[in-house]
Length: 351
Image 1 (spheres, rainbow, N blue to C red):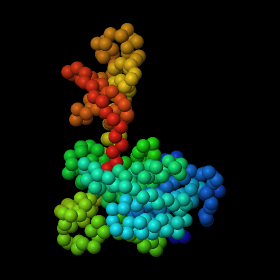
Image 2: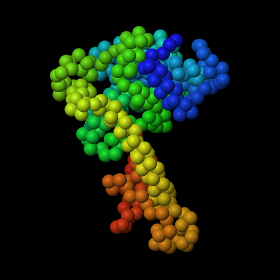
Image 3: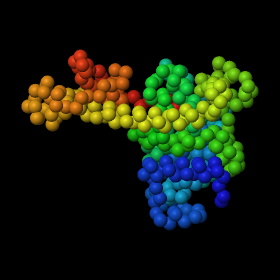
Image 4: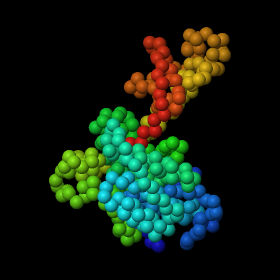
């Protein structure tokens, strides 16, 4: 099969993401062209599929890339039950995934509760909980999310509205662990135009969520009754691109890659600070490093001088590693003494 430029980019991006996650070729025979059955007991890759253009393209490409590596490839469809006919949409997405050759394919119904941040946040929480449960039950190695660079740009603009700092500029990571389950985003360098083209080339009839406002005239702003992300997609980002005279989705995604390196570096420093400056609840771990305490015979001032200077938390907050670790009593030193706060595990997933 001759691949289009969009398919070549997508298959390459998918393969690179799987390889980076340690899910490479399971046997030499998978290097040969042609259809291959996966190895018995091969790792399972699950695709989170809504039936939309991005996730259907992701399912199709994942099936191809997994076949080249001898991996099993399945799908999970989450029915939020927030729109009339949602069960029918979920069943159609499942049928499409099965027709592509994915197995197993699981449909999960969820109950969307309330959240201080609104219905979108509550639906997102319910969706990730369902995906985590499915991954655990099916013993999946990873779950694939079909976010594109357009999604990345939209998320950055939304987070900047909320003034969430460096993390907002970094956007969504290519790999994320939620409650012990690895999520990969292999399409962050692809555009929505790419996934639309892939669906057209493969004859995939995708579903358009009516809340996205696709039917609304492109030259008119989307009304306030639509979700914020839809209004950013339909109105703000195109206007931003027209004003700048360039594709701002691409520019924001490029900036996110640079900011992500900064965030990961700061996180590594925070982890080092945590190793020196954390006392576990119920334990008796003193502030500072044990080797320095031994060298200074327990003198706290001498120990403080001997230890490397602790990293100051950004915006006077506890290091990220501390904030994400359950049951930690965090203590960090500064120029005016020591302060302590207790933090609970917070696996925030904004997208």
